[in-house]
View 1 (cartoon, rainbow, N blue to C red):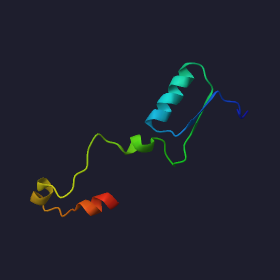
View 2 (view 1 turned 90 degrees about the vertical axis):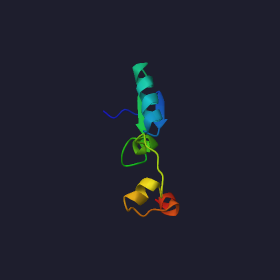
View 3 (view 1 turned 180 degrees about the horizontal axis):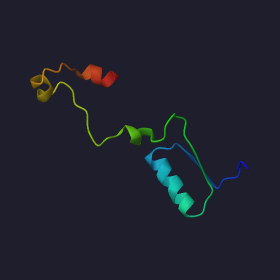
Length: 74
């Protein structure tokens, strides 16, 4: 049987969307999470608790050539 009646539809399966879907489910709602991407996680999936910097003294010391324009375009 395919369910077609939902109490909550969550658009986006990133950290916030999955938290909302989880909370709604815990409160007894029938939830349909929708994600356009091939994987769940959204922007949260891309975040690793790090920040990006380019052309730093550490990179120069290690012989790594980098520049802010390349970082921006990446």
